[in-house]
Length: 470
Ligand code: ADP
Ligand code: LRH
Figure 1 (tube, helix red, strand yellow):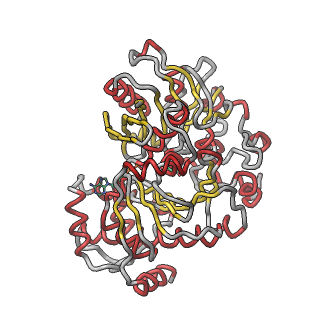
Figure 2 (cartoon, helix red, strand yellow):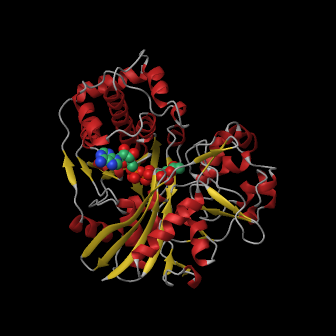
Figure 3 (cartoon, protein in one colour):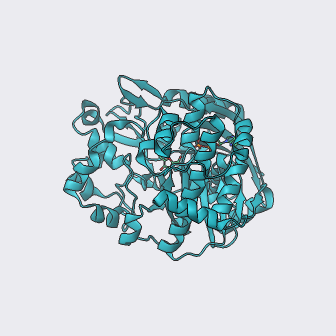
């Protein structure tokens, strides 16, 4: 039996978890959970990276002696280091508006079809490529000597070692899908210095021991699927390959796992992405707005009790309002109820429960569309949908997703990301062995999974979808 610490930073909260792993056994306990609260200062939205690092250090202290540490976080964001290795300012939040207009600047240099052929990535306004183009010419970027993605930055502070873990690097839109290396020519064409990017490292490689002066022992930090969604997909307890997954938290990442990318024009136009997965897999998926609108409404309402609100929402009649959650109007923080009201065409929702019902009906519809498109575009037929992440606790959403997709939903684990993180460490440390299907078999043996059968109201979902496309 070995013990591994998983540092998992989501957009809504961070946590340090301890996984105990042996052949045939796997358990996970939270040792520290902390809020992830972005800060707006001087008109820019930042991550509070030092508060997150403090939460990580406290968690690692509480975890006690471990055999390894793995770090994952949300994608696309980065910190810049100067020539002395000092962080140049706070990392900017991907929901900051600085990237407005950056996509047009990139498109003037490289066509969107060319960019898709090279990188395989969906066009999200906040991809690292657009953030760097938006930051061009700033003194900060001029002074930068190294760019580290968020998990790589934390690993650097823990070990002194720099590098770029592959799965998260694949979300920058600066990685060449064909060669698997940095797309140097693309960077140069866009005025981004290729020397900013450290060498790539694969999940499962040892980054280095923790620096003794941190006072938490000297366990190895091990590269995992450091993009949280890559670790979440490892943590999907599926048998076989005929499954779709929804990694459901702040975002819903909806897709299938493939051996090779899909780079067709139809795929590009549907905005499906080919992100790098663990063990050379491709995470063929689409970003759906997820529980972000709900999180923002809860913030606006002063954090009411979510389970109570969800029970009330379950009693609200279905489809009173549906909105297109793919609309970028929902991306920035603030005024979420007003934006939902406008999009719904109503003058008001009447109650928070009605707002929540609108979000969940709409999210289930978006899940339905993405699961269907993932199958059509990839040719992979699926016979079940796995929901992992915090959204797996939302019974109403799981049931609505089963109904909308006309497929069974298997919900859980809630902490799939931390489990995927722990499993990749445990395999690297040779505590366990096997391919992804062996790791998933261990999850099925040890983790609680709740099954939701689709209820037979397919016509109502088709009608709601038509109303939305309308
Ligand atoms: P992220 O990694 O993006 O921060 P998580 O996977 O931690 O997100 O999921 C957070 C979401 O989980 C919240 O937005 C909330 O909607 C949902 N959630 C958390 N607790 C509950 C609960 N008790 N019942 C239903 N949903 C919950
Ligand atoms: C989910 C996630 C997602 C990215 C987004 C920025 O936490 O990593 O996969 O697209 O954050």
